[in-house]
Length: 108
Image (cartoon, rainbow, N blue to C red; front, side):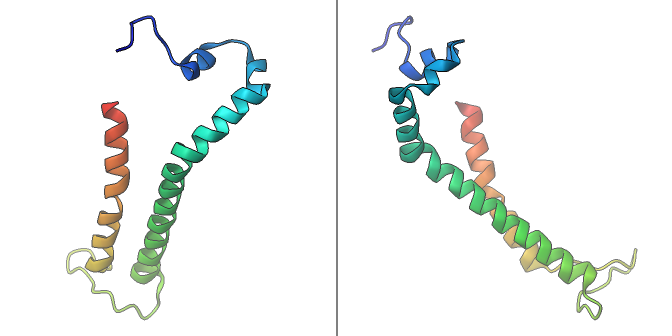
């Protein structure tokens, strides 16, 4: 069990005002190792998720509003196209990963 005064090397380095410490080979190797082992996969997954979501938004906009002979139904109240439900469902499912990840970050 750690003492209250015990800190990790990363915490000590991040609290330091000496930026030259990040130029040392040992610190750079440690940061590269931690990036490759832990952070790279998480951030790549987040990037891919954002690209997929952006693609679905573009498809939804094109199918609902920009296509001239759109087969989208019109609402009786406002005469605006109603988006396709399956695409909206996919977009909602795609939002589950950021919700899960950000929820975990809030708990920490």
